[in-house]
Figure 1 (cartoon, rainbow, N blue to C red):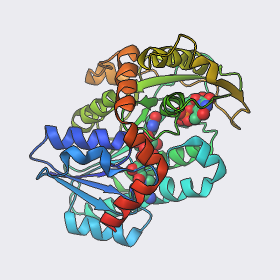
Figure 2: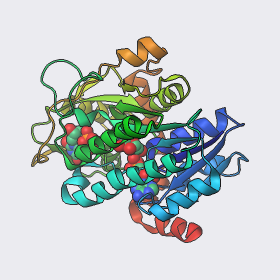
Figure 3: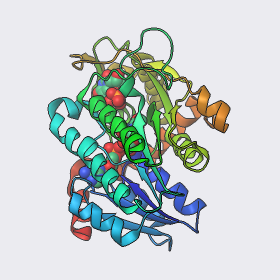
Length: 346
Ligand code: NAD
Ligand code: TYD
């Protein structure tokens, strides 16, 4: 089987690529990534030489290139993770999100539709999405049947791409699955998202900018558990279905930040309370969603998935990884490293 994984040099994608390359030696895994600021081949250095792994540098916005790629490699399946993924960036530059998340996805759908036109059997377009498409929650949990109600340019672009995937299923019979997952954390996450940003800032004694009053709630899932869920859905999920994936693990931002601060004090042998002193309440994010929480009972009862690590375990693994990989942190934030890899692959 030839499997195209897009966005494989990014945070979640790198864990999915590694899992598939190591677990399925008889699959050919093609990792297509534009290596934007968020994509780093350092994340996959350990599997670079594997015979079933190929990296392809390319942009999903380039339809001619994408069509040719499908012709050349005759992919049987696509796991689509490439995206602009950060809400704050979507507020300052919505068009970049429209381009990659919507047009880029439609480019892939068109290429899959054309290439598979004569034989849709054993083909799959698996689209990775977010719980943010459902908007903000008061009471209750997001279910697969919850109406889409996106509030940020990021979630609006992801919602649109989800609709296109489903529409290609209805209109052209394209075999597809969509999963909507909660907030991920873990190794290789670019230090602009809450957890890695705050770890990096604590290491460097910089302030911890908590948006608004900090009483916003997110449901956190360890990234390797998301990768395992993707593996399961890819192989066992029913075509045409949607599955919600979540950690059964809701935290108010401020409570999570305080737990993180306490753990960082311990790890860095700093006096209790040192990191908490760095907390600074700052201006709120515009359109900030109050609460996300996933009902993951469908994937649990139908496919038997549940998270394998507790939040405490996952957070400790994550902190230890960032403390051990300060060079990675410095590289991805310095820009030099990215230029190096860009030169290698351009
Ligand atoms: P990321 O920003 O870490 O990685 C995105 C990757 O896509 C990068 O490697 C980047 O180089 C690549 N990319 C961006 N634009 C591209 C383009 N035009 N062509 C080719 N490659 C391009 O993102 P992530 O956090 O790993 O998220 C991966 C997917 O999972 C996204 O679709 C995101 O919406 C979804 N998701 C993320 C989370 C989360 O908490 N991070 C939760 C649920 C769903
Ligand atoms: P983030 O990691 O950006 O993920 P998302 O917006 O996709 O949920 O943010 C998680 C939560 O943390 C969200 O409520 C916004 C908040 N936040 C801060 O308070 N300060 C920050 O510097 C960042 C990046 C996020």
